[in-house]
Amino acid sequence: MSYKVEIMYCTQCRWLMRSAWMAQELLTTFTDEISALSLIPSTGGKFQVIADGKIVWCRKEQGRFPDITELKQLVRDIISPDRHLGHSDKRPPSNVD
Image 1 (cartoon, rainbow, N blue to C red):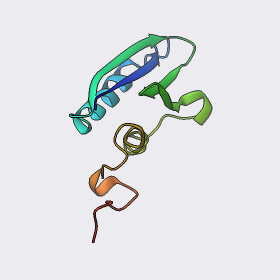
Image 2: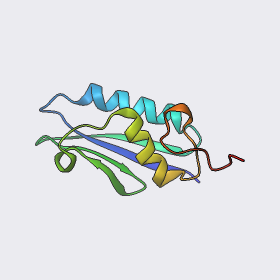
Image 3: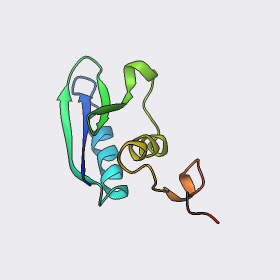
């Protein structure tokens, strides 16, 4: 199954580079799962990451930006919940004997 991810960022705050870097990290990690990733310019300090239509991160609600490991885990939980993210994952792989 393939999923759409959106990163909405504030142009007034100049968050394009941060958004583009996070997009690159997500696309590299979820090569087979993400079919489209959009960077959506906005204003008013907005920074949101939306996966499969669900907001997985909102800077205004969280009061900060996510670190990339945290963001990958949140996106993974939506688009590929059984996938282990390697050494940076908080939970053990589901196929451990």
